[in-house]
Length: 207
Image 1 (spheres, rainbow, N blue to C red):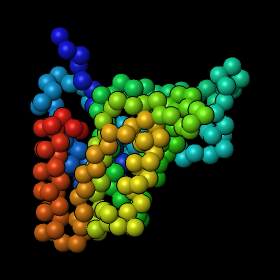
Image 2 (image 1 turned 180 degrees about the vertical axis):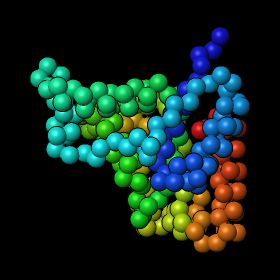
Image 3 (image 1 turned 45 degrees about the horizontal axis):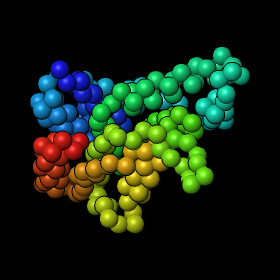
Image 4 (image 1 turned 90 degrees about the vertical axis):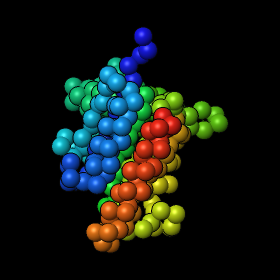
């Protein structure tokens, strides 16, 4: 009997289930589950359960040695460990990443801050940093009010590609829904285009 597949869905839309990235993610996950009966989906909702933003206390805790951690530091590290465990359990990762003010949501940035840990999810070598989470394809559902893909104004794509690659996640597919604030017609067209890309990706198991 084959191992049961697991998909990790990281949500960061301020609008919950009504957010366009969440709507597209729901479509993707539904199609993926249809192709993988009995598969498990882990949902990490960064809006419903936000992570604290990185501060000096958390930075020190995440970089502390286990044998000298205070009780407070142990609690912070345990929170990070749980996030990393979700990543390690996942065969597929879906990041729902709307654009707010030309960037990813701050809640999603906090998630990255909590999972990027030297010696755990990456390590430094003589030839540079090496990511330790490889082998898990990532699909980024990038929803935008305007048109930014391929332009200097798109800071999301290079940042996410760099950050994911730093952790060893180099198999990344970006699916864009752009211009959704331009008009109702453009929004509908953008979602249709994104859904077509999702169907193609799921059909090729590239999610």
